[in-house]
Image 1 (cartoon, rainbow, N blue to C red):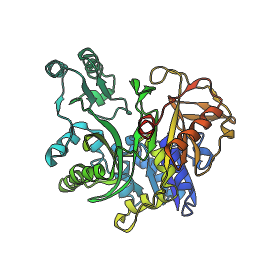
Image 2: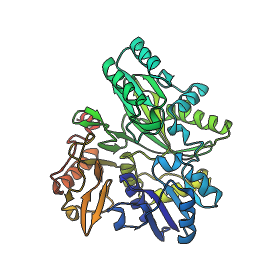
Image 3: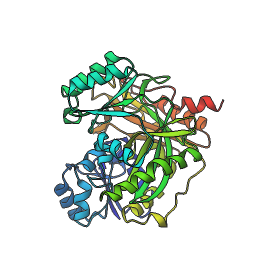
Image 4: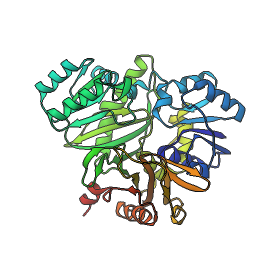
Length: 424
């Protein structure tokens, strides 16, 4: 098969790497790709939110299967256009992608099926939103309704912080994504990510992971797009996963079918778990980043077979074969992230890091400049390793971090700390 992966981040590099391991992959193309993806695939400069541009490219390049990485093309209806053109693709339609593109929509779905989630209110103007915060108090969670590149959720520890977040959103800090706001109850517990493949009402669990959103050690400092992750997540036990399937995910998928917008693709449920009971934090309609990196390390070549079966509506014919191991990824970010940071610094010594089924450096924000790898984003590298134990995976990942020569970068030193603490 000729396969096209859309996106340019660490998630897409991990997807491309796993796909490239499968002998069914004859040619791999990434659009637009990055410096790391260029080492294993052809890169094409395409507007990945333009259905017509993608269809034309797929027809010219004889592409058999398109894997959509980020949320923006999904919300733009790229999957719809590809399906209409008879091109197999992995990713939900725009109508189904509203589970991520609109937090109000997701809350309405949860209410319709009785799925456990945080209490909330929805606002379209600032004064009433501020009044609600004043009545509820803090801590409280402020969410832009639409897509905000992973930055539209503010956990406000004080009323003043909540008011500032509301002021920013309604002033346009997140563009149209913040024109409507959801204010939620602050849930306590431990958060984890549950990934399933969905073909209408057929649901296949494919893994669990735990992300580290805060920029600093011990989960301190501002929220980020994610500073590291590990898989599996011990807090998401078989019993908790079954509850999530029975009470949250399967009812949601049935409701989507009932509404005439069946879901097909990967569904990522962010769950808050307390006293062995899960509540939904949010849905995402694509793989998490950096959770995808640890999932792909553990899934390997079978990831292509799973995604293609999902796209063709054959989930009932396939099973997931897990190795009984652990994977951990450490994000190396540019100094200053998640605030202001500089681009263009050179990253050296990447070649000394091993690249095999147990060690990979996935590129998240890089570009190639005449043979030099330069930083080109906030989160730049995902240093990833597998081992029989989580401790072993962490040791391997941080050993690679130590080899990389990039003074302008930094990372958290404690990825996996909760699970590692609980095993000692």
